[in-house]
Length: 131
Image (cartoon, rainbow, N blue to C red; front, side, top):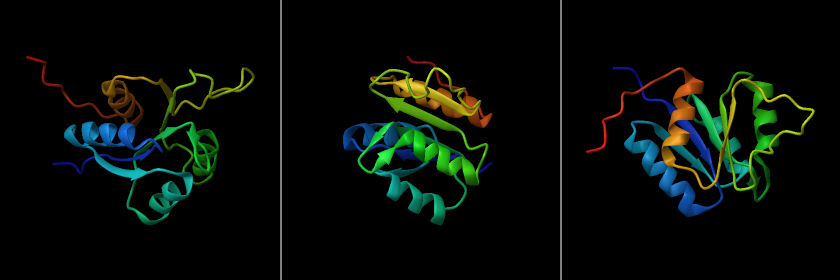
């Protein structure tokens, strides 16, 4: 059996982070949690392999876009899923989003984040149909 995906969730809203973490863990994904850019970097520097990052755009000590640009300096192909309550305006009109990025607008169904993780990491897990 393959090792589970490891995903870093960076979200300063405790309830959103807790709900997303529980959903992803129930989907057999190992989740590391951070509520700030500084905490995210501690995980990135000290934890084992991380396969994707899910980050809010607005964070108390920075923003998700800058976090993604900095981590791409070290891991150019790291998949990043941005979550934002401000629409899909992460990139300026003149910027081209990296192919490893997705934007999920709040409020979002938790499955949208899971689908983006599987799409960007090239993994797929069969879902059990709802009864």
